[in-house]
Image 1 (cartoon, rainbow, N blue to C red):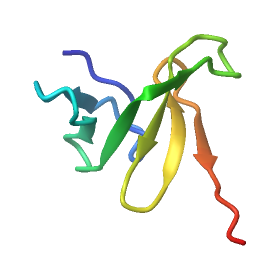
Image 2 (cartoon, rainbow, N blue to C red):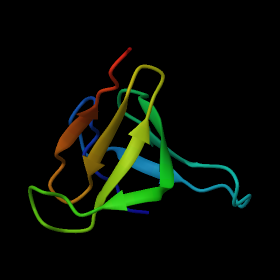
Image 3 (tube, rainbow, N blue to C red):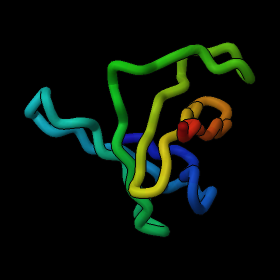
Length: 82
């Protein structure tokens, strides 16, 4: 399994784990800093930075964001509170 650049510590140690249960989200984790996030596999889009369809939506305990596995660009998702 290939590793990616971790959006938290910026080291090449970010990888995913897929559960056989299709209803369980893909879990991403870093074996350097122990950061983890869940991927919403129904949401994938083209990255506006590199123009590749490699941008996925990740969520951790504090935030939701778009992360491109090709160019490592991170775009925070901000929700307005009424």
